[in-house]
Image (cartoon, rainbow, N blue to C red; front, side, top):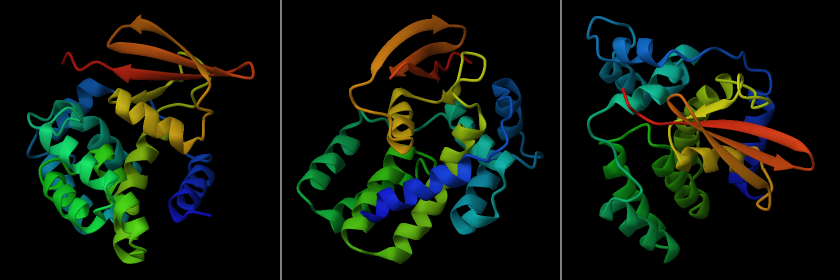
Length: 209
């Protein structure tokens, strides 16, 4: 089994027992911008980069959802991101990892970038670096799993972007041919994914804060 998918399988096993918690975005915004708060974003990022294993679930929640309120983040529409994808498709894994690392220094909790790092180090069979970035990736995706169980609108998984939604669907191995319907809701959009009469609810946040 490919190492990435083995780790994803283990991730699902671990997160299946996680405790669900209500996400208060207004409170998260307040705390990550307060320099006196334990959840001040820069303080948590330093810990996240130096000792990711020491991050608890509440800190992970603030790191993931707090990204919504940052002034500068890396978008999949950015030219630098597109260039990285081209290098990745050309199997220039070492070069791709180096460029992605530079972008992560500006946007360390970007799941798209972390996914690219995992792919690069998996292909290079670099277990040390793979494990480091997997640890960060796991913390952030755990925050998503902790936000709900996806069984209905009230307990929908909460994600920052459509890109993160597809990463979540990849982790839970949702079939590619599943049907999707969407409906607007306060603060975002509900996507309802249906497969074999089973529905999974995901709310994509629109950052209007």
